[in-house]
Image (cartoon, rainbow, N blue to C red; front, side, top):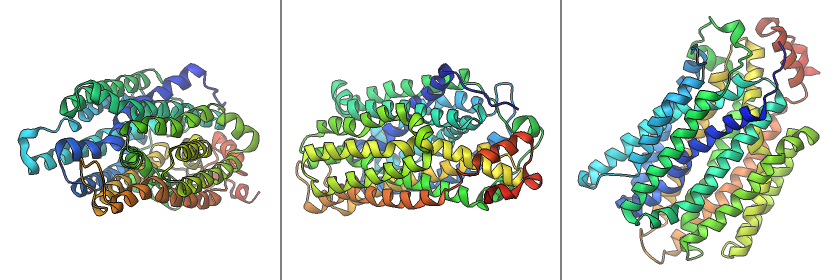
Length: 458
């Protein structure tokens, strides 16, 4: 079976999906806490608990969704139907989450937020995102194309994140502020979520390497689970995903940092520009750098640069120019790993399939997605809990020193610790030297018991 090289239009069609998904996911991650505390009037501690419980439940549903995708066989494909049909529902639930009915009362509002958020996160976003992520494996088995898909995906994702973090506060104000502002902003974002995802789900093409040999084979959840969790590279990839999303407490706290450290909520816009524009530009050249120097070396260099950036932000935490410089440097440093994340998971799926003979292209993404969701759940909870423990006063113009410390911790100190742990984890993902031969063996059908184990020692 020959490797298929993807045309650019197909890569762009794929990337468009993550643009849409972020108008749900990043919008919620960045603004749900401040919406619920300052507009609805809910306690930050309660919000943190809701987000964590929903994300943990979300992580469990992820474990099963990958097996569902692996066992899906339709004319539309394995992953594509899940992307297409869940997209409009995802948009509707995003709109509902930012329109909490005032007549429900305190208890009713808590129940409403929990139920809507649970449905969005644990059911429809899970189905959509795992299908979307696994599409990388179904579209191609070419390593360069996988890195390219990852880069293009995150260019689109970061373009969405940049738009959301830059313009949301302006849009809420422009649409009238308060609940009215959030209503129209969330309506716009719901459309921007659903339409791009539906385009990806309809027009992307699947070319599944394992499909031809396994189209009649049904893979049980326990079989896939065992195949994955007995592979050290999968465990390390799962940890890497978890750490990557734990680092993102800075995204959820940035609006608070701009408001209470720099005394201007609108400064979130230049902070977001500094954090995202260099990354978007860097992702354009990431595949070429990875091809020239190798993914492993580029990731090491990048994480080292990121650590330096956080040290700068720690030393000058209340200086806007220093913060902007630190965010720019950090953004550049994170480019190699962000570009490589999807490819790493797809590669691990190949390694597991080669070793066990169990096709896990959907399951490997479902389990790393579980790590992502749990990581994001902990992240959202940490932001809310840190504000609560720090004595944050919703709507106050001046916050106590303890709240300021909590805000700085979520913006700088905690993300720094996560980057250090990511660097340590990446050291263990040392499969690059034998991966090309593994792919050759897969193409020949030498998987499971018929594989050549000596490859790993070469």
